[in-house]
Length: 250
Image (cartoon, rainbow, N blue to C red; front, top):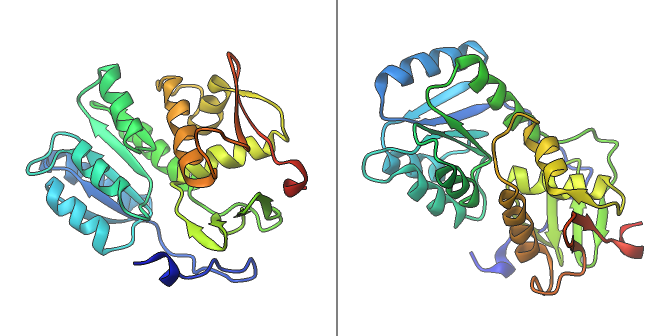
């Protein structure tokens, strides 16, 4: 779709329908699928199952999902290939990677490719359900009282979690939006990389500090006029990041 054909951003007064959370489970191990599907449905989620990477990618592109649970070791396309393909789409749901590969480099790769969380097998059902709830909460709209704000030609509406640049929608992942909103809530104060990880993923998360650098880089590419010389998403060397709004953010 050409940029001029994109729909304009919705006004804050527009409402969205509340739907039962729909989860796409991409997993080729049927013994795992049976237990996960049963527990997810017991929690009240609608679950669609895809048994290989190609089916999972096709399903994610042809239907609307609130969350994807994505295995790494899949036939046809592995989970990292699916993640990489989804990252090229204008819009995609949050993704939790499920993997028996526990090496740090695999976790970093998954998060760098756009995963919102990485869970190592074997995992407890209770832990996974907690991570599912956390991911869905991050993807929900905040309280309507939150005010829309602006930085340069970028408008951010927390009530609908919409971001527009020069009046055109900008697709942020759920975690990218959360990082941006967290920096805004700091009101110009510097947040360390560890503080951002603790707030977004929780203190028990095993991601690396490099993960935050990657999310900031992605936000700059989408929101800054010149990502190599950012005006708003600023690095404080040796400390962390802060959001500089100036008069445009008042």
